[in-house]
Length: 500
Picture 1 (cartoon, rainbow, N blue to C red):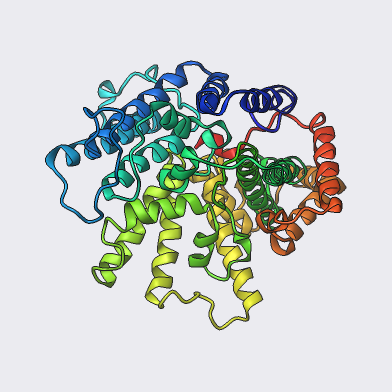
Picture 2 (spheres, helix red, strand yellow):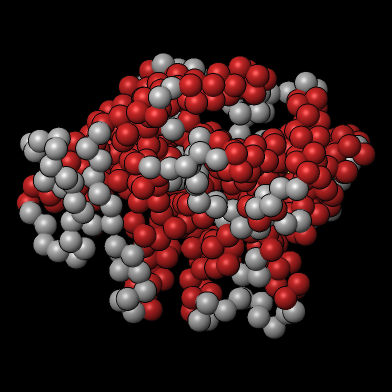
C-alpha cells in the first residue's frame, strides 16, 4: 500500500484517523500498532514476522541495558550515566541488538548480491560446479533498511545514556512500526520522540499543518516526481541517447528522486502531525548547496546524521588525524552507498561522494570550486551530483559507463545493453529522434521546468506551512485534488525508496 493511492487516501487513512481519535488515550498506541502492522503486512504478511523479531530483540536488550529486565513495573526507569562504565551484561545486550539487526539486514538485503558475486567469482576461476543454486533467492522486506536502523538506535541510545528504556512493550512496538515513516523513512531516532511517546499534544493547528504537509507531499509526488520519472525511465532505457538528451534525462532523474523522497518525507511528517507527533526535517533544499559537504547536510538528513553519530564518530571521526579522517569518510560513504542497494553501482556512488567529501575536508571544508561566485558553486555542485546519480539510476555498471559516455558524446552507446562498439562519431539510429519526440512533449517539459523552479527557488514545505492563512489552505487543497485527478492517468509508480 502506498500513500499516493486511492486505497490509502480514501480507505486506510480515514479509517486510521477515525479509529485513533475514537480510542481512549491509553489504547491509542495499541491501536496505532495494529493499524501499522496491517499497513505493513498488506503487501506480504510474512514481512510482519521480521519486523516483530527486530522489535522483540531490541525491546528486551533495552531493558537489559537499563537493568530493568527483572524489575517490577512500578520501579522507575532511569537513564544511564553518560560516559559511565557499563557491565558485561550491558555490553552483551547492546552487542546482541546491533548484531541481530545487522544480520537481519544482511541476510534479507545482501544474500542475493553475495550469491551472484560468489557465482561470478567461481565461474571466473573455472569452477562452475561450486556455484550456488540460483533458486536460492531472498525476498527483500519493505522498509527493512529503515526500521532496523530505528530499532537499533534505541538500544544504542539507551546504552549511551541518551535515552530512557521503555517499560511498556506496546509503546516500543508503536515506535518501531508507526506506519507514517515505516516503509521509507525518515529514520526517526528513539531519542527524538521518546518524550512524545509518553506525552504529546493534539491540536487543530498541528492537525492542519499536518494536512498541509500531506497535500504538498502528494503534489510533489504526482505533479513533479512522476512526470520527471517518466522522462528518466525513457531516457535510461533507450537504445540510443544524444548528449543533450542524456543530460536532460539524468537531470529529470535528479528531480524525480528528490521530489519522490522529499514527498514521502512530507507525507510522513504530515501524518505524524495528524497523530500528534513532530518528526524532524529530512530535506533542506539540497540542490541549493554550494558544496558536497553542504549537500550532505541538506540531503536525507536523518540518514546522514545517523551515519555520522552511529558510524563515523565511533570510528574516530576527525579526532585521529587527517589520514584517518579521510579513511573514515570513505568507509562511511561506501557503507552508505551499500545501504541504499545491494549492487556495485551503489558502492561506486558512495565512493564518489566519499572522495568528494574527503577532498573538501582536505581543503578545510571549503568547496572544490571556491573561486566561483555562489551561483557558480551551486551549479558545479549540482553537476557533480548529476554525475553520481547516473550510477544510482542505471541498471548496472556497464550501463552507467555507457550513459556517462553518451552524456559527453565520447562513444556510440546502447544504454539498455551496455557499451556499443564504435567511435564517438558513429551515427545513431532513428531511435534518438523517437526518444526526443517522447521526452520533449510539452507536458513533460513543463513538469521538468516546474520541478527545477521548485527545487532551486521555492520555499521549503517545513517553513511554508508554519503559518496557514486561508489562501494557503485553499491552495493546498486545490493542489491535492488536482493531484488525485491526475493520478487516474498515471501508471503505478511506487516511491523509489521502497526498494532500499
